[in-house]
Image (cartoon, rainbow, N blue to C red; front, side, top):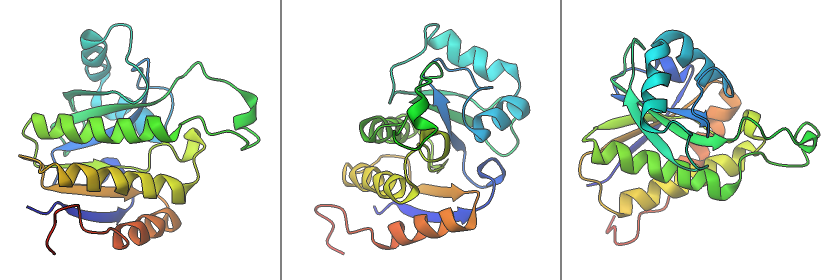
Length: 194
């Protein structure tokens, strides 16, 4: 079964119709620091979500890992996937000069793959994914979009049991357009006859 992949422009936390939202997280699993989405989720979901993640992993997780929790009081979602794409104690000033990516290719690939796998294992039918790694992660948007779609293709080739929809949400119109172009360039998964 082919995975439906679509792009929406706007606030990822406002997308409706999917049970899970992937939150770009830090490896310490503290929601109030890092991406704008993580900070918004911290406000809307309530403190219980962060406590739930830390209850599973009191010392945090490795970069690239993902943690599944409830969505707390976040409207429209039943689950959150906290994808560790940053270390909140990584303050190398070269990032500020855009000479260094804080989120590496390997970290982003692992975070996306682990989020998709966890959602599928939990029996979730769909999720909302953002260009994690771009923004505060320092990764160029075009590279981030390509890596996201590469991992979605790989996951699709593994024939997911439950997950049937991935919505890529970008706040800015130009970022949504980059995601759309990357999604249109998607080649069929290995073994796909279409």
